[in-house]
View 1 (tube, rainbow, N blue to C red):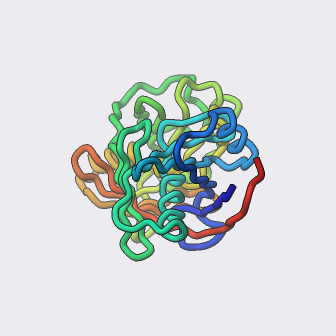
View 2 (cartoon, rainbow, N blue to C red; view 1 turned 90 degrees about the horizontal axis):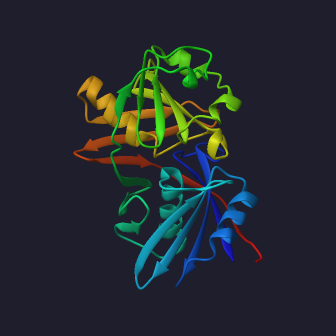
Amino acid sequence: MKLYQIDSFTDKLFGGNPAAVMLFRGNWPDVDLMQNIAAENNLSETAFVLENGGGLAIRWFTPTTEVALCGHATLAAAHVLYNYEGFDGELAFASASGELRVTRDGDMLTLDFPAAKIWQIDFEDALDCFNATPTQVWRSETEYMLVFDTQAQIENAVCNLAKAAKIDLEGLIVTAKADTPGVDFVSRYFAPKIGIDEDPATGSAHTLLTPYWHGVTDKTNFNAVQLSKRRGHLQCRIEGDRIKIGGRAVTYLIGEIFL
């Protein structure tokens, strides 16, 4: 069976966030098989796309678990469908997070995702996972978001992965206003609880980050950089209860796996 590996939210090979993509037709494979493939791939996400009756559905697996939403692997799947599988026009995926749409303008792909509902909370000892203390803490149903004062704090953040693996939600986003010209905000994302020590470029995290920074700045369009070693570049726009997340993708590998 064919397997693709795509670097998402980058225009350079070995940048952004790598995701594996596999396509199936008719019926989903066994869940254990999908989980085993994701574990074997050992990437932060493997996207499985099902084409059935002209419709598309998508699921995402980390090396250890299935998740309800993933941006970079959806971007990777769209890149594969547009460039190698003969698809054109707007894509619509059924998913655990509702219908997700993707459009293409040249080499720019734009995800249409639901905005996360976020609310501010008090800082708790259980979230003391970093080498600095945030000024604010927010959360959604699935992630915590820790707000810091400076970009340097995000660049130099050291996460206690053992402690972060014990939090009650999936992951920890750290963010600050950017001091790089042309960039609005920066972030990083850590999720050892679901098998991802640090994710290089996380589209789903920006469904929290964009509403937060919209509330701070009253802007609707943002250039965002995820400050992992591989760097992720995302263009974000808030439109009511939807977040548009734009980025590019580069093909690294097209191969075959034997099942």
